[in-house]
Image (cartoon, rainbow over all chains, first blue to last red; front, side, top):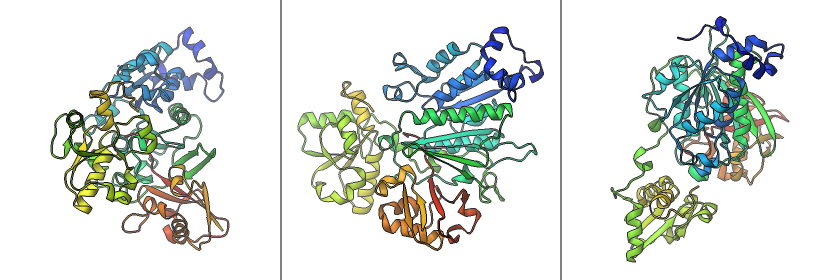
Length: 394
Length: 92
């Protein structure tokens, strides 16, 4: 049974812990009571989730929900300051709960060691007052946005890419009961797959999520406490390379399928499909389904001296981190080097996870009718997992 | 002269420039000038039907051109355009 806001009390330890909030005239104990009363859901415990969770916990949010399905990996530690080296291999939500409980034992944590998807998002999100989206992919962005709109929750948003940061407060509830714009007012549809850099074509400067996640935490605290003017109906852009910040206005899109003039969407949809992602292409495969080559079979091909061609479609700087030989032709340059593809041999295509290589194969089959092309399922990550544990994963 | 700010994700298609100056009467002309100077930007801004992609917003000052006359929005000397693409993290 949730305690009423008026009944919120603080112990001596809590009063001392939060004293720097309590002596801000505009914030004071009333703001702190609202924080303690609040239930905030943080989606993702990655680069954005780390500062979000640390600051919201330190600030004294009463109950924090944490959703993530992932385990801590070495490549996370460059930016996900919630975790230590000793956490590698542990479920992120468990490592997060342990670290955060040590930081502030007065906060309750409700962890969901699961992937947020269309079947569970409304149920999970409905249990909280406000959501902070710290996810790292388009399908989940649209899922969180749509679920927040349908469940009537404020969505505190930030997104990062390399040197670029974006933030906003979506679906904000104004005093008159109206709602601010949401993510679909800004970006009605995601970029088509293949256009946006993915996997290691992406990357992010490690401090950037720290900056944006901290801004997100500040917006959560403002929305909960009612102090200040939230970043609603506005959009913050940070260029970390040039150190330029800009704020733009976001207007409502009359064609928004959720909140426009003629709403057509009243429930959650298949977001992988919406974003043009074919799940069959991205799942790791241990068997050789049509056109898919497992790393085990690839290893057999190599060991048996089979006459085939291996083409690595990653970028040169990725090839330097880890490779198994082959011809390096980055995905974006494949059409310039068609002559390098041997039409008389079986050709196996490799990338980081098996997605880019599949895109290349789809293109070559569709546009040029090339045959005998094989996608190495799971890419070089699968090779590192199953064949060569000494290989660096990135 | 119109200044177009290039967001960091698209700079590698614009010779690493943070901004590009063009002469143009309206937004459509400005973006066309930009893509003629840096043709590699074209698929990241226009779709196959040569419309501005839906995950890309164009702002004049701090206002979305959608709230004005879209790509027909008239420009005056010294105006600043910003191109804002959707981004979604370091990996998928």
